[in-house]
Image 1 (cartoon, rainbow, N blue to C red):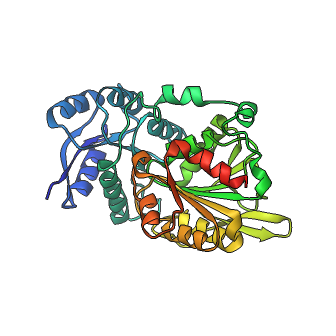
Image 2 (cartoon, rainbow, N blue to C red):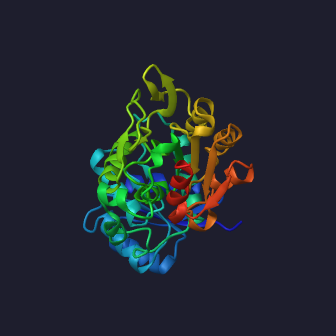
Image 3 (cartoon, helix red, strand yellow):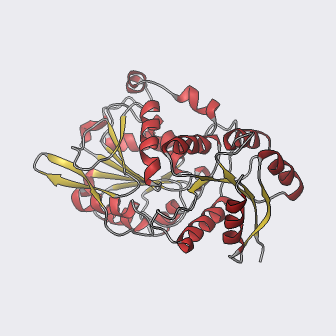
Length: 359
């Protein structure tokens, strides 16, 4: 068996030991080194050539962000960020994903309602996914601060752009989107191609609850439509994007005043809450052919069966193609079972979806 070789970087000796023990406990992964700071990590990367790096967000001296930025410029490699669950750290972690980190995981907590075994399984799953991920360097068109700054545009610019200036609300369609690993940047790129007068968009991104509000705020500052973290019972309106909070499933339902968002704290589906399958199932049941399903990069199979039910109910469905995915997992599973009507590259996804929505 060829093992994935992992370098653990964390300033806490306790955390280095805990993460190393969890990683070494599975047969296909091994920790080849543990570094307490960026300088030591840099030397270990040169000497040991790891397959995947786990990186602490907050470290003394050169912090995780600065180290990641240099790493992705000089030697791009798969990185999983390990962060604490705080609002300040969530902003930093989102920046790390923008800089090119594949994924992130919170540090283990005794109050998180998650067992050590569950945490270890999540950690090792993310490392495996990172090993097979497509890593893009610091100056790639889809990652990094330089790449994102020119894409910032205001609502009036987006609405008048010839490439996306479609009165997309005319068809009465609603867009439902799901993503996981690599999804924060993929969703951002998708929404940057969406005009201000878009149909309502409901999104599930696998993410802890302390991160979804920051994620929504970040997107709201970049994209033409209004982006909010759903609180439940909101009227579903054109020009608005609703992000599922990290603690609840997001659904759509019919109410006296029209279509409304709904949150549910029911059991996780496919180990996730929020789950893409739950969102897609509600779209199939409530809207049928008035729905459009989009599944983007991510590990696992969440969303595949729900998208199939959407397509069977008459919805149009799109999946991100393998070449543009960070992890071709969820779109692949959906494609294999016939749930995806059309595959396309991420940079063309918004155009295709909006064109269909306008019909």
